[in-house]
Amino acid sequence: MKTDVVIAGQGLAGSLLAWELLRYGIEFRVFDPGDGRSASKAAGGLYYPLAARKLKEVELSAQQLPLMYNTFREIEKIIGKQFLFERPSLKLIRDDELEKWAKAQQNDLAHLISDIIPGIQLKGVVPGYHGVVISASGFVDVPGFISATRDWLVHHGLLVSEKVSGDNIQDSGKHLIINGSHQAGKLVFCEGPAAAVNPLLASGTIRMNKGELIEIEAPGLQEDYILRKEIFVLPTGNCRFRAGATYSHEFHDYEPTEAGLRELTSKLDQIIDTPYKITGHWAGLRPTTRNRLPVYGPLPGNSRVFLLNGLGSRGVIQGPWYANKMVKYLTNIPE
Image 1 (cartoon, rainbow, N blue to C red):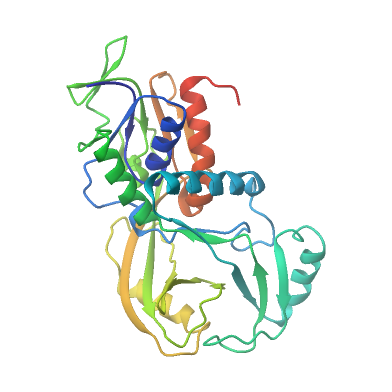
Image 2: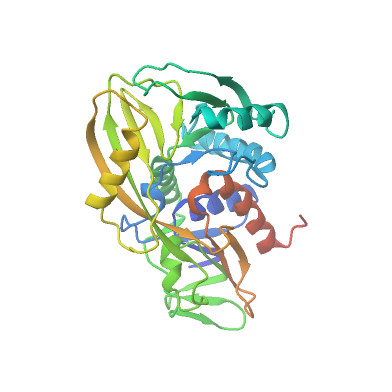
């Protein structure tokens, strides 16, 4: 098999890069064994233009949001399924925060804060909060997107069910030989957290960050907003919600924990005051970097092997942007 570009890994980054290469007419194959272990398959998939704990707009979100919308809408047309769902977020704040949010609405964040509702009363929500409505938010069904993309790639003969190992790549001088039998002009590692142990990458390039989420059934809870305080509560329909997430650099496995469950339910109980039933609990590993910015481009001293990784918890909004930049790197298309 010969191709221009091989993508190693079909998580969120690898899937988005595949669609970008297709859009530019570049021949490619995606290598992924489909073993079910992926950061993206356990992702909440939220997009939100504000920094989690800071009263400021996320850097580049004004440019990244339009590209994100366009990218997923185009893919939805090709596949025939919806993945991106727009849903306003409601930031729950207390009395001592109201003044600074009101000032932000009048100044730097006027284009993002659509309303501030003092003493908001919502079905199933603990009373006593004020609500800040952020309209430019929503979520992507990341597991559904990855699964549908995999089916599309398989149908079109673009997916190879193999793992690319960093120590099983040879450079012939004209092309790369991958896994002993495949030729490629260039290789892009989109391995997610597995990149932390890739022998071709410098130690510490990618770090693992474990996150846990739960799914609940709560017929008495509002479904108009994504609730945000210390955690998010995301309505997914039919009285079901996802709540998360935890963050830990100490554990590098995919197993949900009792400690994670206690943390999530404790924070959830500060937001909602209606009975709920836990219907799911899962964990994933996020690929992150020390400065929380994705890494992309060629490996040092290597013009054929590239990296696109570290999308982290903002992968939905950042992914299309960096996939587009990666294609321009691969093809020398001017920015």
